[in-house]
Structures are given as structure tokens and as C-alpha cells.
Length: 617
Image (cartoon, rainbow, N blue to C red; front, side):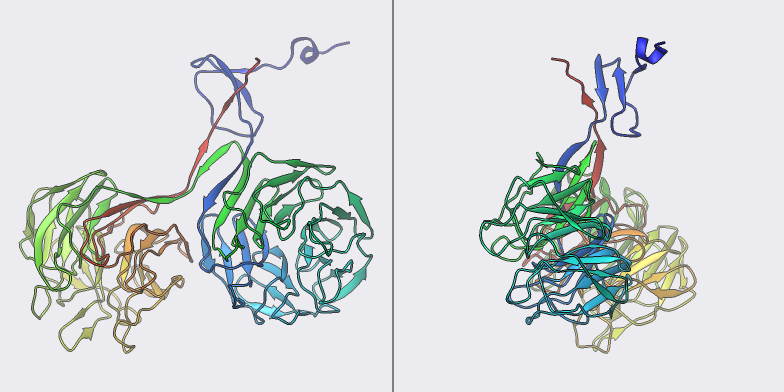
């Protein structure tokens, strides 16, 4: 006897607006748009943040958002660098013991393994990664490079490759300690792509020793290799990942570099509607069949480009910098100055000459599109620090055209500046953060010859007192983000190093003590906090040419790459005080070869859930 669902079918939800998605395939009727709708997966690539170091023929392992690429060819030097992916950008990882290209990786970000490769010569060495450092594992039975691999650190599989004379069919299984021979593949190949597990693996495409590249696919069941359906495109040196029932492969060469992507459903390959924006080969690939990061590679020259493939009902828009409104007065020396948010910012003072010194006391307010003149500071100065908001801001310290440096503090109420209590130490190139009634002022320098400071001061809305502890080391020209009790300080100059020899170190403050933070990706002097707090901040710019366009994000543990500024600059104004966010930042003014009035706004990566209308025509 037929049941209700067979007679009447399943009910469709009748909704006035699209719901929050739960799973792909959800169906409902939208009464406002008079349409039957569903969440349908779409395949697409979007730009992600570039690698810190351009290279090709990388090893790779892990998933999104916890993967890594390692080694490679920087053209012509080989690499021993590891970069870890956190879903948004790349952070520096541990250094390989043996520099190499064309090694093959598998496993996870905290338990990875890299097999073979070429120095040259070709290598037999295996190295294991624990999320921070590499240690030597058991050598392969014979040296080889351009291998396919699959599995985990303690249950890995290597297949094929090149030993200097032959295109190999050789297979070995790795248990984390020793290698054991497995049965040979049916087709000898190198520059092939592998995925899956030790007992359910897939080896895709590659070079069989002649052009064009192979379309050949083989699966492994832990004992034997079985020939599977060919891919649609010839390709080798491609990025791929997944399982024996759901895999994806992108790019590569055949021998020309290509952009096309194919998906595997366990029995056959289908050409995906999504293609790489940039054709390349020798890329690192991390992820799954529905979320693959394709990093680096060669387009004819080595590249750091990263693209991310998603099969989802979410549309991903990559983070980016965009031009904002120009300030009315071009200036520099607003190092660590500025406060507020992307749509309500404040900046006062600075220097309108390059070279030379022409001190400014004018302030300007930003509404997210244009700058308007505000009332003047009482004391003209540059290299001052800022904190607070547009309607409750602070300007602290700086240089007044002669020594000693300023200790003056001024408060802004949205209309005018009022003098308040002086800092205990007059200085410039310090960093401030927090609010108008709970601010923190750190480090800096003063005098000639120069004295550097490690002390920090607290402001309560009236007067300054020493913070509970000094910084671990004196520094100046650094930048900071956060609050009086949860701050991050980045870069600057730490004596007794050479003048203007910047550091990549950071320190965190918890309200009572200082601890080392993650290392910045480059050494920086005059970088600016463009927005955020201690656990989610973005910094941009630098006086360490050619890194002036560099931008990095901080997640409370490590720094990762962000899109670069369009215009290189340093000693710029930014957003300090803890009211801004790392996904809606801004940087303004600063030398770009001369004084600048330019503003750039940062928008972080955005995921938008999209519903598709079901068309019955």
C-alpha cells in the first residue's frame, strides 16, 4: 500500500524570506519573490592571499584551514621554507633540514611528512613535521623526485616518480618508521598527483616519459593498482586532493600550462565550470574535493599566487585594499597616529615636508568616503601616537621641532582639542592603543643622541602613570593594536642594533605582563595598525624597502599574509584604540616617496550565502 509521501510528496517550506542555510539541497518557496528556491553548490575559484615566498615544485599537505606547503624552487635557488595556511593567509612555519624541490607531502598540518625530492641531486630523505619543526624520518629505499603520495604521517604511500634514469612504477608504504614495498603501478610516471589513504589511494595524470602528459588514473586498495577512467585533459605537475570517491585536480601542464579543473566521482572525470584565473604548473595543493587551495607554481616564472576552489552555495569574496578619499593635507610622520573606525576615523598633526620638517597642527575626520577639516591641535607635532575614537580621541607625545620630545596629551571630543596631563616621558615613534579614558602608551625614543624606551604608561582620562611592567626590550617605530589590558606590539627598532635595523618580533600585553607574540612575516619599521584588536589585527606598510606594500593579519597566535597595499608607505596613520576591526581597516598618509594624502581601506574576506531559483522552463 502506498504511503503518504508516495501519494502527496514531501512538503516544501513556505517562507517570506530565504532562510539561513543548513545543507546544500534545502528547498523552499519564497513568497516575497514568488519563486521556488534551493541552496545549490557552485564550483568557483577565488583569490586568496599570496605566499610570502614565490616558488614552484612545492610539497604540500593538510586541509583547509590547516594546511602547509614546503620547499620548492625559487628560481633558481631551492627552498627550505614552510608556510602554513589558516584559511585566510600564510604564516611562517618550521625550516626543512634539507633544502629541496619536487618533494611530495602528505598528512596534516601538525603531523605531515615530506618524501624525496631534488636538491639536486635527487634525495632519498624523508622528513616529518609536528606543526612547528621538521625531524628526519626513515630514508626512501632509493633516491627519487616528482613522486605521488597519499595517506598520513604514520600510514603513508609513495608511488611513481623519477630516479634520474627511469619513470618509476615503484610503490612503497610508510608506517612512520619504515618503508615496505608494495605492488607496482601499471604505468610509470612522474610529476603525478596523489590523494586518499594508504589503503584507498588515487594517483592522477603525470608524465609517462613523453609529451603530452598522461590522462591516466590508477586507484590503490592497499595491495593492488587498478586502472580507472582517464581524465579529460592531459596534465602533469597539477594540484589535486580528495579521496578515491571524490577528488579534484587543477592546472598543470601538457606541456603548455593550463587553467582547467576536473572532478572525480569514483568512476569518471568531469570538467568543472571553475577554472584557475592564472594558468600554472608545479603548484602546491591542499584540501578536499570541495575546497582546494592551489598555491605558488610557475607561469613561466615562479609565482606566489594563491587561489582557492570551493564547491559550495557560499560565494567567497577575497579580502582586498581599495582607494578611499584623499586627505585635505598631504603629510607624513603620523606614525602610530590616528584612531577610530573605517567609517569614523580621526588624524591630527604630522609633517607636510619630504625632506625637511614643516609641522602640522591641523586634524581631519573621515566618514568612510571623504575627509573634513576639524579644529586644530594646540601643539603642532609629528610622530605622535593616537588612540580612542573619532569623538573621544587622544593625541600623545611626538616631535615638536626641537628636543626634548613632546609629553603633551590632548583629548578630542568630536569638535575641539583640549590639553590634559603630560606623559611621564616625552618621546616620539611610540605606540598607543585603548580608549580616551583607558589608554596605553609604549616605547619610543627621544633626544640626540637617541635614548630608546621600554616603559609603558597608562592613562585614566586625566593623568599618566607607569604600567605594571616594562616591555621586554626597548623599541621605537613599532605599531600596536588592542586595549590597555590586551595589546599586541609589532616591529620597530630594538637597540643596540644598527640604527634603522628593524625587527620582526612582536610582544603581547595581558594587563600585568609581557610575552612574546608570533614573528611578523618581515622585519618592519614604521608599519601601521590598520585595524583590530590583540587577537584579530591587520598591520600594513613598512620602511624596509621593498616591503612597503606588505600587509599581515594576526589571529592572536601567528601572522599570516594579507593582500598588499596598492601604494607602498610607512609612518602612516591607522586605526588604533580597539574600536576598529581587522576586516574593516584603513591606512592613510605617510611617505610614498613624498608626503601623501592617500587613503586605502581594507575589507576582509566575505562569505555570502546565495540561494538559487529553481527554473522549470
